[in-house]
Length: 185
Image (cartoon, rainbow, N blue to C red; front, top):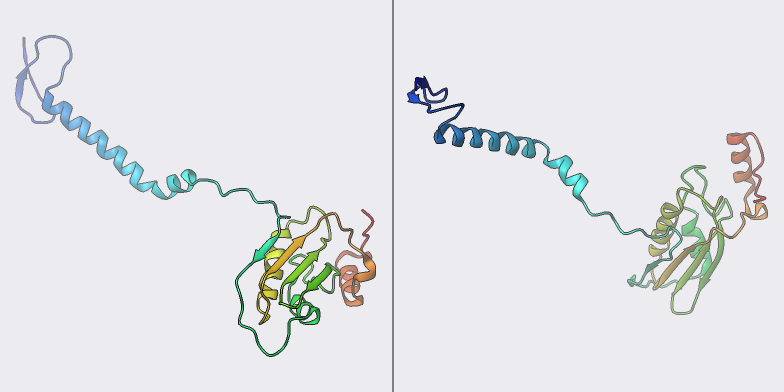
């Protein structure tokens, strides 16, 4: 046997045969590897957390949006005119025109207790902003004092009817796309 120096401690030691390391050196190597792995994990926690999140449940963009919370009533009753006035503030993100001008409000029903039900058409059955428009319509009606139970239904099967589109909307559509909107689906 010939004595060798331990690379970690610098002490001389005997190695009986073959390659071997002392228990102290093995422990130090294990701690070093553990620290490297721990450092890697700590540095990558944000990306690890992002990839480990549970997916949000899939909700159909055509599912009704419902607000059952009450809004304090004021002296004016809730009626379809007030609902349409508030819906005129909801803009289509692509065209920058209100859903009222685009003729997307298919029906508004308001009962005597302030319950509001809306059915909205879409410019196309695969509109990428379906949920956004529905949520903004719900928020707009929610602002009306006295509105109680609010339901917004987005129906992709209702054809977009040009007779319901305002002249301003037709003009803007034509200036954006160079053609009058074709709604024959």
